[in-house]
Image (cartoon, rainbow, N blue to C red; front, side):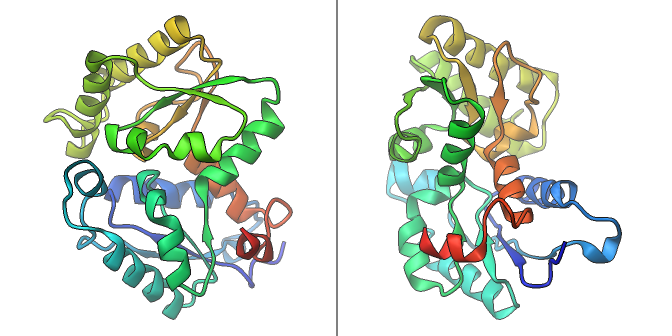
Length: 244
């Protein structure tokens, strides 16, 4: 496998643990025989990028300028394709892509293709996401022909937000059993009460806690799908990314 033409740029600064986790997914999903065959991967974890949730829900500072700068820096460093390991950041995808010459991989478009190929009969998908991601309607826009369900009351939304942002949440470095129990409870209620046949991590931090075998239906990590897309040329080429 020739990896010389693809240099993966990771646009971080939107959760250091999620950025590191995505990098490890790239490593694990790359099919190589020796260390020298791995893709060159460049990470810019820019801490100056404002919080997307604050920007979307409360009119906080826009993250777009710093995200564009970060993507441009990745290009200058030699990246041939970039990816954002944050689902909510894709709300700003089109604006950023217009300002950057290298293609950005659209995680949700890749997810839609994966779901269609792997679970062609699935009709309803449950999404574990922050309120900001829900409000952007990113999943409804890009997972075409699928019914999308979110935590369906304030209590469930609060549980997801607590699992991610609470004082004992993932953003505070707590990825233990209590956090997992909160997310599993919400997911199983989506399955039983809403009839969801598949659960998707709608916030990258969710995948730091939940695994494929934790729920009574399949659980999909969108960033794992993205890592597979970016590391397997037979799955998606840079020219395909440009056409997206």
